[in-house]
View 1 (tube, one colour):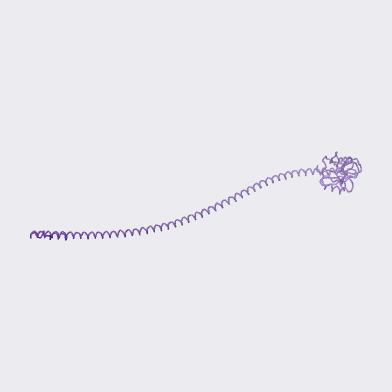
View 2 (tube, rainbow, N blue to C red):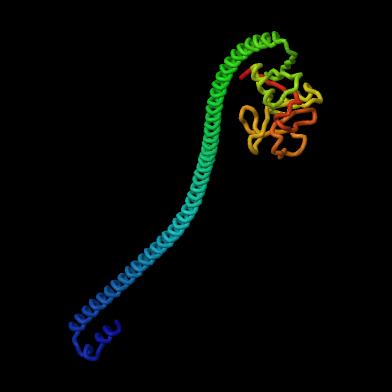
Length: 305
């Protein structure tokens, strides 16, 4: 603006006329108006710029507040997400723990049930084994019982047969005793344990004594056990009696051919070669020559032959 005024009032302008001056003044004012207009426009533009700048700053503040809000919301959301994640993670762990606890409990229960079932099965197997053993024992006992029954039946049958034989032998014995009673000589018969014993009152040799026993349907006595020996000791008294024992070579044998196994010698085993026939007395057995005629004899007849 000062430059314009300096141009208007320059020395060259002072030399111009009035008309020119008026034109110059008009131009001057026009220029001044233009300058003012320019200044007004500049001020308007400045105001507009300032307004625009203010608006921009307001917008920027709004954007910043929005950004801050968004950041806060993001932080809050992130925090909420973390809290929710932790909560649900804990819940998941708790649910998993509860589920695993229940499953473990179920597994324990099933395991206990299986163990109980296994024990029951073992007990059942033991019971079956015991029952099998008892059955086998019963079968064995039944078999043994049947065998015993068969043996008893056979024994009963044998006893019946022996009873029949005994009856027959008794009848024969009665008949035989009747025949013996009709003999004129002096005799004495004694019964003991299914045997009849004749104790002679005469003296003969061993061979003659045997012959007499055979004529009576008996034979010289064979002593089988200690009880029979004790019975004959009591029945004969202190005398010596021929018995059915003689020496065959170096071996003593009974009259039925069996070898001597049980003996009642008074002394040690007889080794004399001349004394080959045996005698019995109260003191036990002795041996003498078979041809000696100063001894009595004992005959024996078994009822059950």
